[in-house]
Length: 325
Ligand SMILES: Cc1cc2nc3c(=O)[nH]c(=O)nc-3n(C[C@H](O)[C@H](O)[C@H](O)COP(=O)(O)OP(=O)(O)OC[C@H]3O[C@@H](n4cnc5c(N)ncnc54)[C@H](O)[C@@H]3O)c2cc1C
Image 1 (cartoon, rainbow, N blue to C red):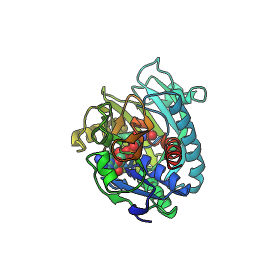
Image 2: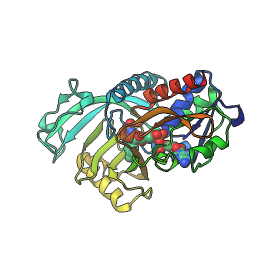
Image 3: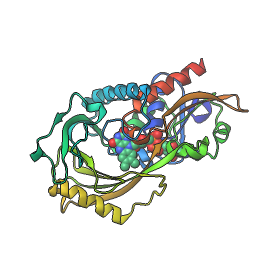
């Protein structure tokens, strides 16, 4: 299969693009993917990634996509234990009156005070799928190719019409994350910058997510075998992809306060990703003026792109297949 033979051109090779392309390819549609950056260089590769709708415009669709994705990730965990597992851990707050996350309400048990790190006043025991994104993106890429998709081509487009110019595909699926701000263009898309540090895992098996010491900080740690992902920041409107050494140090210090075993762990990487924030996820179809093509949009997942990935991929694929007739 080559780009010229594709019925659908997917733009973007993060978790949204690869999940959508995989679902379409496995449904028998001829697919090509073009992206400015390969999967391992995307925001998706930086995510922690714990299932749970966070920093995303909530509506009924989001709840449905999230539950559908949770079910699919849970089923995949048995097949792909190296990159997905059902993990347990603690969600905690520095405010005594805080409530558990909505998605866990009803199932979360309140932590006893002695289970909480210093400075935290409320907490809950949670369970959810957790995904090692570098491995998961590798898995998705292989699954997409095995289903007959054309190899990802590295190509950056200035406009959607430019994308239409490199392919005869009647349908284009736009999975460009923060790139949609310029590509569509869509001024309602903004970046919420997230910096993380990956360290060698000193033997931690449970995750922790808590409010952070600063206004734009969270403190979290997600164990993935030998790796431990430490976070992190949530800086709205900051588009810098350069890790800041000072922020990295602050993240390690805050996580070490929560789990002192982290002290002395080897720092393996500093990474930054830009969460594609939008008042609501864009998942719809429209004609691309002057080209005779249709564009399915699937972007704006904020801090929940992994958590919504399969639900949105299936919804986007259905729109694309209906347009193909
Ligand atoms: C620190 C951090 C922690 C996170 N933790 C979680 C978590 O625990 N759980 C969770 O669910 N989510 C989490 N997220 C959010 C999640 O990572 C994003 O919502 C998700 O990765 C968005 O995926 P995407 O495929 O839509 O976009 P991206 O991963 O950004 O991929 C976009 C793709 O489009 C391509 N592209 C963009 N513009 C163009 C263009 N003009 N031409 C061609 N190609 C283009 C890019 O090159 C890339 O291939 C986190 C994010 C960060 C930064």
